[in-house]
Length: 541
Image (cartoon, one colour):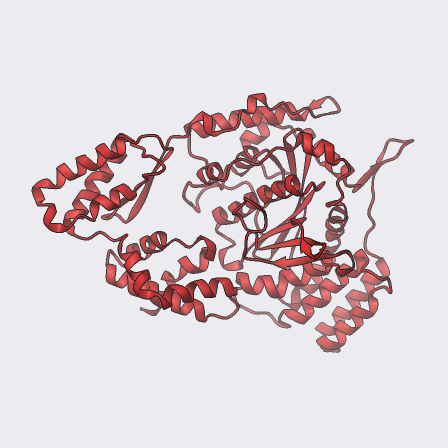
C-alpha cells in the first residue's frame, strides 16, 4: 500500500505548481484507484499533505499545496464535480464518447467538454435507463451545433482515458509564404531553405499530429527558430538543409559574437578566445589529486583553489571556472552515492555552483535568479532560472533562461524536449522585448548541461545554436573528469558578454518576428508521450 501511494504522488511532483489543474489531478488519481472516487479524494489529500511538508520545495508551491489542504472541503467539492455520479451517467459518458470519436466531432472553444460533464451531472432520477440514448443524442447535437474549435477532449469513465481529436486550420498558422527571409551565405540561400521548411511543416501540421520527441526542429521552425545541433536532426530537416549550410550558419553566428574572426589579409577564420591558463589548470589538478588522496580536507582544498584566482577587480574567465570547481567541492558528496539527484538538489548543489560564477557579477549588475514566477510580460511561460540585469533598481528582461529536469526524469524525452522548446521561445521573446543581440539558453537534463545561443540573423529567422554540452560530476570522484572538459564553458562566457549589447537596434526592430501564439504552441506539443518513439536529439550521456 505504501508503494501505491508513492506512485500516486507523481502528479504534484512532476507538474509545476503554476500548472496544477484539479481536473487533471482527479483524472490521474481516479484512474489509479480503479474508479474509486473516495479513494481518489483520500489519496489527493494525503499527497498534498506530504508535498507541503517536504524540504527543498519552493515556498510558492508549498503555499499552494497548503491552501488546497486547509480549504479541503472546498477543494473536495470542486474535485467531486469531475466525478461521474452514477452508473447511468457512465452509460451516457460511454455513449457520448463513442459517438464523438466515431464522428470526429469538435466543439466550440468556449463550450469545450464542460458541456458534456454538466449534462452528465443531471440527477439520477431524471435519467431513467430508457432515456440514456436520448440524453446522449442531445449532448452530441449540442456539441455539433458549436463545431468551430480545433480540439475536442472526451473523457471515457470506463477506460479512464482522454481522447483528443484535432482539426487544425490553415488560418491558425502565420502566412509563411509572405515571410521572405533574405539570408545568403556564399551563394547558399539559407533564408529560402528555412522558409520552404516552415511552409512544408505547416502543411504537415494540418494533416498529422506532431510528436515532440521526433518533431522538435519542426515545432521550433514554426515559431521562427532554426535549431542547430550537429548530427541530431530528423530526416525531414536534413532534406531541406545540407551539412554545409549548417556549418555556414554556425560560423555566421560565431562571427557575430566574435567567437571566430576573419583575418583581413589571409581571409582565414581563427578562434577569438583562449584556453584556460595551462599552469593554473595543472595546479588545479594537483590540488584535486591531494583532496582525493585525503591529503587535504575540502576546506583546505577550496582555500588553495581560491589562491589560484587572479587579483583583478572582477572575475576573469579562468576565475569563473575555478570558482565553479570550488563551489562543487563544497556542495557535492566526497564519496560515490546511489541517491537519485532530483531537481531541487540538482538546482541548489550542482547547477547553481557552476552557473553563478559564470553569470553573476554585482559590479555589472547581473544576477542569476531562481524563479517560479512569470518573467516576461504577456508570456505565461516561466523558466526555472534566469539571469537579469539590474537597471535603475529593477530587473530588466532575462539575458539567460534555463530549465531543469532532475535525474529521476531525465528519461522522459517528451518533458525534456518541451523544456528545450520553451527555452528557445522565451529566448526569442526576450530578444524582441529587450532588444538584445542574443540570449543564452541553458537546458539541464540530469547531470548534463547544454548551452545555446539564440539570436536574430535575418528577417524573422532566429538561430538557436548549441554552444557546448558538459557533464556535471555526481560526486567528488568525478570532479577530475569535469575539470578536463570545463574549458568548453569559455565559449559560453564569450557569448554571454555580448548578449545585451545590441549593435543595431533599428535593424532588430525592423526584422524581429513574434513567436507564434501560445495556444498554437500548446496545440502542437499536445500529443501524448511514448518512450518508444525514436528521438534524434541526445539529451544526456
